[in-house]
Image (cartoon, rainbow, N blue to C red; front, top):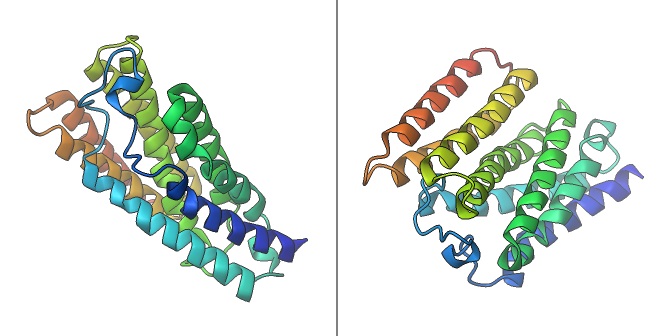
Length: 233
């Protein structure tokens, strides 16, 4: 079964990377998908930040391929594969779902995050660049993306004004990120990816300046960097 799971992981990674072809032209939720249109929501990072998806796709495929070819029967890789397969399989249908249902996509991305984090906590001690790092980057971006989705829903459905919704979403994402990074005591790639998202949020909120969102993002970055001193390699 260990080798079968290694092959399933590679298939799931390929399917996940192919998902943009199922939703051509999708660049995030459109403003008119919400009862209160979200034209320039402060919770959303600047557009350039989403380029990290290219790195995530490539690294997950490369790691899964390495694992299938070189570590197909290695028990050190076995525990992390089943939850990763589930997360990637769900991710393969996330983009098409996001085109038709904001709420459905929001629920799904949180399930993707939960299973990605489960995989990250199960990664073994070998082949860090191929086993741990791609899952850490993937889980880090999902931490940011799932929290952003909450902020969009809160503001887009009129439950909170945009800035309070963004602040609540940031607090949620930072609580998860800091807890995960502290409990892992490794995988700095996870925290670095969350920082990438926070920098994107800062850039998106500098003109005009949203001091509350920018300030909380800076505090979050400093907190993650402070925790880095407790990590082990």
